[in-house]
Image 1 (cartoon, one colour):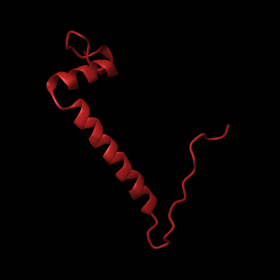
Image 2 (cartoon, rainbow, N blue to C red; image 1 turned 90 degrees about the vertical axis):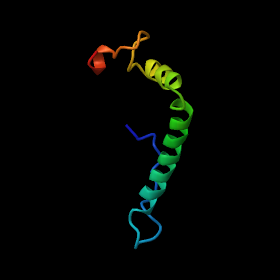
Image 3 (cartoon, one colour; image 1 turned 180 degrees about the horizontal axis):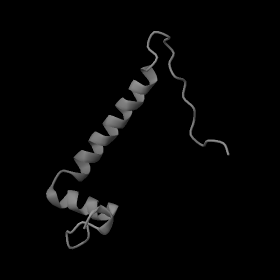
Length: 68
C-alpha cells in the first residue's frame, strides 16, 4: 500500500538538516494559532468546540472516554 502523503525533501541545505521540519512546524503553529483564535475566543465558543469534538456532553460533563 503506497503512502498518500507527499514525501518532502529533508533539506536543501546540507548544513541545516532539519530545515524542512522547521518550516512544517511553523506552518502547524500558524494553523494552531488561527484555530485557537477562532474557537477559544470565548468560553461559549470553546465549550461548543469541545462538544463538537466529543470531549464534553451537552450538559457540560466530560464524556466517558475522557473520564466522565
